[in-house]
Each structure stands twice: as structure tokens, then as C-alpha cells.
Image 1 (cartoon, rainbow, N blue to C red):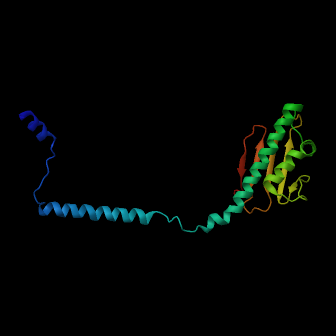
Image 2 (cartoon, rainbow, N blue to C red; image 1 turned 90 degrees about the vertical axis):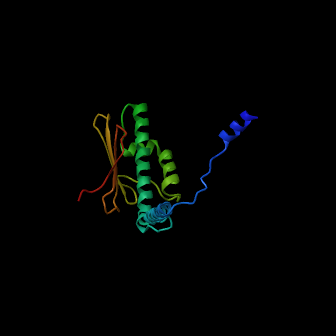
Image 3 (cartoon, one colour; image 1 turned 120 degrees about the vertical axis):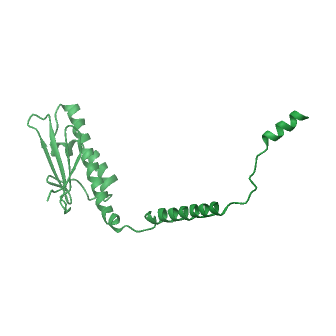
Length: 173
């Protein structure tokens, strides 16, 4: 019986039943006040998820247009690499249009316009507002591609070459 009492006494939780002192109550109140102030400050300093940001909405059409331009440069670059693998040299815009009209029209239908009368033109303006410069080296072993948005006030353009690195460019001044 004595063993069971020892076991019971070791498992019981000791509870402090004394009344809190005056200083303890003040510390507890300060802790609550400071926690509340920190919480209010943290919530106040966060931007509202419901706030309207008009600057990003105004830039949205530019972002979509620029993404389409990067997509077109990527498509043309892929076609150039395909031709290089098959024929041993990079090709001019005229040749690319003739050989890969279906691929280019597929890009048009998916990412640019679903209208039947829209089609790629000759350089420089291959699409309304988009100017293309595609310079192929004389030996056909390299190229530089520049697609420029002629309607963009910042001079936005996408640049690519035979290495496959796509760059975005803007005016410096």
C-alpha cells in the first residue's frame, strides 16, 4: 500500500494555490498590453489584400504583349535551330516563312490573334507594331534576331542569337 501512495504522489501535479502578488499582476498586464500593441502594429503595417493597385493593372496589357513577343522570339529561334540541324545553316526570315508557315500561323492563332486575316508580313514590320530584324551571318553559322515593339514608349525589344539566350531591352535615355 505504501508503494502505491508513493507512486500516486509522484504522478500528481502540484498546483500553486496562492494568490498572485501585486507585482505579478502588473507584469502580466504589461505583457498583454505589449502583445496587443505588437499585433495591431503588425496588422496595420501589412498592405491590404483588398487595396487596388492601378499601376499594375495599367501595366497588364504591356506584360501580356511583352510575353507574346518573347514567345514569338522563342518560336523563331526554335525554328532556326530546326533548320540549322536539318540544312546546316540558319535561314533568313523569307525562308523561315516559306518553310514553316504552318508553325508560325499556329503561334499566331494561339498567342496573337484568332482572326483569319492576320498573317506574318515581310520585314521590318512582320505584325502590326512589331518590327523584326533577323541578320544571318554570311556563312549561315550564326544569327541575331531583334523583335521591337514600335508602339512602346520605352523602346522595348527582345533580342536573341544562335546561343539561344533571350534578352529584353529598353532605351537607356
